[in-house]
Amino acid sequence: MSANGIAAVAESYQKFNPRAYLQNNYMPPRANFTSEEFAVPWKLRCLADAFATGEICGRTLIDIGTGPTIYQLLSACDYFEEIVATDYLEVNRAEIQNWVLGEDSSCFDWSPYIQYTCKIEGNGEPWKEKEQKLKKKLRRILPIDVHQAKPLGSSLSQPADALVSAFCLEAVSPDRPSFDRALRNVTTLLKPGGHFLMIGALDESFYLAGEAKLSVVPVSEADVKESFAKSGYRTRNFCSYVMPPSLKIGVDDVQGIFFIHAQKIA
Ligand code: SAM
Image (spheres, rainbow, N blue to C red):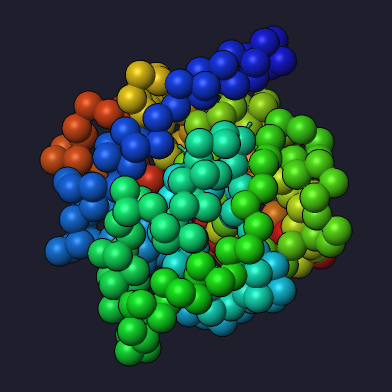
């Protein structure tokens, strides 16, 4: 059952349009930086606060299912020597590569995100410096399939010190058992005692990205906590956000967003 479901998900992603996805989720009204009542500043705040503890650090951070976005890496970049971006689709890996190289003038403009992150971190860091720092640390952009027992194949020689993942596992899993299996698969990439910061959709069944309509497995707060516990994590922090009516704009049926900081039991 799951194998057919996974093949159907892979098929549906062939039509994923990165530009439409960015437009739907990373432009106004969702990307409104005037208040943390809006979705994007809420996510940036969760990440900034988690990294500000100084506890999540090391040599390598892997972002699972980076997609065409880099906002989820902005607060991480002071704490790791290398940040590895990953995605299943070549179009998304190319979007990140273009941003890193900075040679394509049609690239998505992440500058409001970088400026806002510098502001909430409160260290007086000039935003251009953060931008350059992240570009330098993003040396590898790798193919990944979270449904494989070894999601990165043989690309990784040592487990990572930490993982980040945003809106990936629930958006690529046809049902709860495959979500749990995907979580166990990516957990093999993390060293014992390592930290996992995950952001995701609550109670969502679909989202749009251009012509693609992607199915999402609806998960509740309790489901997420249970999945992490079953995969050998201790939950360190959990927060949720209720999607306000003004941000229900017809591009998905998401009801809210969760943020979990979990630590792999050593
Ligand atoms: N992380 C980004 C964000 O925060 O907006 C993108 C999330 S997007 C909803 C889901 C991502 O999962 C897409 O970039 C898609 O290409 C990727 N994906 C699809 N199938 C996958 C798979 N089997 N393994 C890993 N990633 C996959």
